Image (tube, rainbow, N blue to C red; front, side):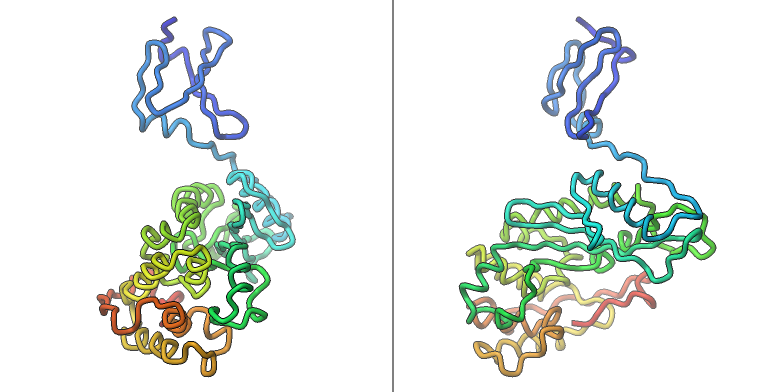
Length: 329
């Protein structure tokens, strides 16, 4: 049977994952199994098929002036979880998915400026947790930056506000109501969901393997690598990946007021303190400081401070000046 183009249309199942062709001339469907699968009388380009078989986003919920910001965030979180095929945790205001021993989270942090009938803003955060990291720390208490009891119960491999890695995804306005003082970069939920699937999910997918993260983590994400990321690579028995990731983090471009001497000297302090912990900053000061990475490098035979090349200095982008300066190392 030859079916002409006007007589057929793509149909996406309720789960949003399988694409079929629905023939309007007969009550039958043909599954579209691959990028160039043959349908009688038709051959479609792979790019067209990939576009047609993308999961379809449902429209974001609409709200009125009487809806409270807390309820708006709750309903928006539930909707977002459905679009990602994740689950909504109302008590934490997190959307999350479990993948084996890992959990990936998208946090929605409400703004203190939210007002019913005006606007409901949320800041966005991504977190990767891995149970293997917790088990490794318990088994190697002498090889961890912090004493094991000082670590959070849930082991963070990577944890950052999205403003630090992708400025466009920093904030979402959930209500869709007219605003007297709109946030300049706040995205609509529909736009955010589409951008998150396109730009963030592929990066989170790298965390299935330290080697993938070390090799392919985007440059804009390197600055938020912490001792948790390096310890995770060690926990997965991949010191080579830990070394590559450490080097990429240290040699990433300097931005704005960041200085190479400060980055390198902080790393060297940790290197000189190891393997003891006397002289290390408190846990809060260790989290995003290179001193903890220097400590790990010395304790686990990773690259030392004299092996790094000074990276180039790049001006801080104009749209990141003022309200959101790039933090120093």
